[in-house]
Image 1: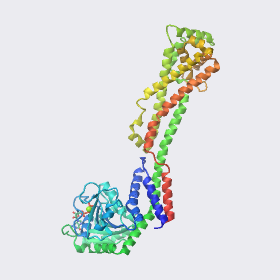
Image 2 (image 1 turned 30 degrees about the vertical axis):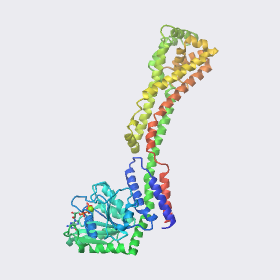
Image 3 (image 1 turned 90 degrees about the vertical axis):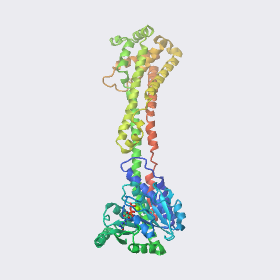
Image 4 (image 1 turned 90 degrees about the horizontal axis):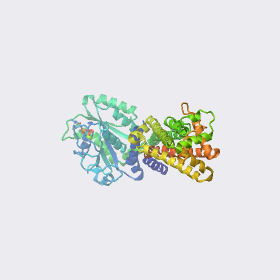
Length: 558
Ligand SMILES: Nc1nc2c(ncn2[C@@H]2O[C@H](COP(=O)(O)OP(=O)(O)OP(=O)(O)O)[C@@H](O)[C@H]2O)c(=O)[nH]1
Ligand SMILES: [Mg+2]
């Protein structure tokens, strides 16, 4: 292997190990499967072979359940090592029969490093069963695999993993099962990566041998495995659970030849290794495709957050400027405050008259400023809460339309609605704002200019007028059915008589801005849980690009 190929492989291994699939997209199960397969092929097979001068020659015995894999392994070794049985599937763990001299390799982390080792072939928990056996030549190991078509997904995945980690497959099938789909999917993968495969056609009724062999070889040719040898083993009576010596003689001699002749072993080893390296760029690029869909899903959820919250913020200006806060109860309290509508009867009431009336009301027994103030705060709070609920709902609707978003919401039920303490936060925001208005008015009241007028209206009355005026901006078109602009104009004019026209306008604008700042803070705070959930499922940036580049580098190096 040339240094650039070695480097490109290490680079791919690094990129693949860094790859994450946090988003639940439509294609994420397939992407995760490919990722798992590639990761294990790299760590179980390729990396040990590029980092070490020599690894044991691994012959994996794979195939359908009940095909007779364990029986074949036992018969090749000459004793019952791997339990064979009528219960399907029988073999759940990979059983590695190796020469004692190779024990260190299999005990180390070079081989299926994430699985614990065991010496008990009947172990229930996932583990690699290591069986040292003098009869197996040093430098060679026979691996009895779980079945490839198991009802147990873990068996299937593990079987594939071991086959992909092997230098040579002894693929066992039967006269009944050889045409099934599952073996051929795997065999085609083997052909695509030039894996060396020998087929054992097991348990063949002698009369069917010719016909089945013929059909099987034509299937092998069309799968790209025309050169794979086929060994037939007739359906025989087992002796102590083992196939008679004569029945497996051709397979045993072939395996011995392959294991003992360094040249033929090297040829097979090389062919499988080269094939598997050559198949890698396409697999890495295919993985990059799945990763790209992760990136797209992640970006779309982030964009949905940005857009919904941006329009929520833009909406705040409209909602708190177009007068809708002054509707309903606020309107009624305002009418009380200014004197049951009398003020509006005359077309051009003088400010002095207005002031006198309001002054009378404020300083009289009945303080109409307080109910007005309370109604304004309540109405502003309702509108603000509505805005928060609306943006949380809008993001939910958006996210539910995307599988990744729906999965995130399912994992984080707190995203479905606004925070439980939103009500309190809204109240706090609104009352903090009104305290700020109060402090502002008191502050201005210290100055000579407006002191007398503020005192004659009363601070509470002045605050109520300013708060009222703040929720209507002549720049924003009044929505139909909202209180006449007249009331808001009256409030502005009143403020003008108290503070002077320009200062009143500035003051009202500043009070509105202060409200909007608090409103924006509160609505913005509703984004936090979404950001947290998305942050936990973050797709690392530029994963797909680096993977693709790593695949390209290997392609160039080959
Ligand atoms: N008579 C006869 N029985 C066989 C032969 N090969 C396997 N069997 C029996 O068929 C059953 C299944 O054989 P196993 O060797 O356990 O099959 P396997 O492929 O390892 O099956 P799994 O571990 O489930 O994937 C056992 O009861 C064996 O004894 C054979 O050539 N002749
Ligand atoms: Mg078995």
